[in-house]
Length: 426
Image (tube, rainbow, N blue to C red; front, side):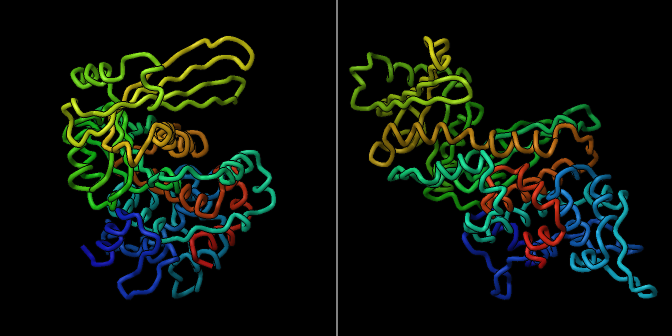
């Protein structure tokens, strides 16, 4: 494996604020990261450089409406010769012109590409790009509704003592079906605060997310972070992995897949509200035509047999119409390695709620804005590779300060030079 590729993969698995190339210089341009990915094609008859093909795909996905291999080819065919040259296209020695790849070339490359290397490169690039100032946003984006909501959220005083958080969860690419009939399932780790994907791994047809979590997190610098997981990953081995191997804290949901644990947690948290008055937190909110009340109570996990357990918690969520009685109630139990001096009830409530950032800001966006589940590209590594590019585009937009990805795609789709500047080509 080339030295640059190895450094890219390692860098992508670390929460870095700045990443350097082997020569010690900063790598703000996407080209430097794509250049380290091994080319799966035979050298015989190869015309288009791999980084050129990948850069065209990234730029096409950045603009709204180009979400499939055929659409990528359409976007590339509409580029000027100057744009193609800047992206690394090879000039014909006789005509001096740069021609774009055809749709078949894109399909062949993404079918056979090393998905792990591509994920390592794009996630490493996102870790290296600095955060842009919100004032740099275009005027239309600053006044967009979701952008205003995000700005209002940013103006709220931060809760002291909050740690960086990563959420781990899987997503099925429903339009991609393997030859054996199984659907492609991707497991990813998502940085909740920065809105970018840290790592992604395809889950094999004959296994599930549980054994794939360790290799997915391998090499990530999670020390001091809080990793939140759903009930599927509430496993003793996962708790040991996070605490002993990564030095991270966990917050796991306890459900019936761990009946003994659920029974112990439920017993530790049973009682009246008055008994937990000093270990509780509650907040009310309104939105989307309804109101909700979230309350949490905590208790020490001294008597619970679970690796690294420090506290257990019960989360209750009551919802109802804006004016009227409560109509529904949900209760969830969880266990965490965070001790009470590092995370009180309010902190744990925020961590639990922010876990859904991976659903709202990654899974939902890829499904709705990029129409991932509607795509039929299913051969070889195409689903994993295209998902990696979608993660790259979303992360790049959020680095620029965009809260609404659809708005960002429309903005960048109005000018190729904007796209080139976004990824450091101009």
